Image (spheres, rainbow, N blue to C red):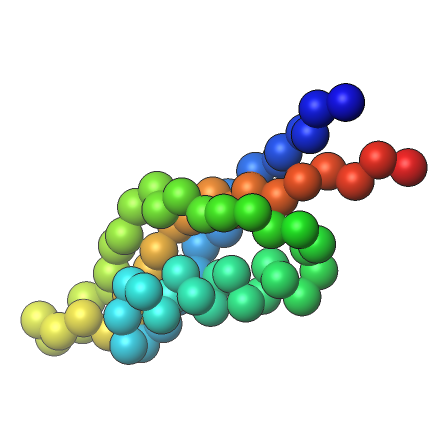
Amino acid sequence: MGTTVKTIELIGNSPKSWEDAAQNALDEANKTIEDIRGVEIESQTANVEDGQIERYKTTLHVAFELQGR
């Protein structure tokens, strides 16, 4: 029998970097989702204040296996 994978879209944020924003989103997902298999970065954006990046945002798709019951 084949494996079915579901993806969800998450937006992580961080004051440090886009990579940290992605990891923050993955850390939160990992608390409630089992069998995460991969991520795909969709986009990277940032909030700017006074000409400086204030907050990095990374939109990612998280893929995980659906569990049969």
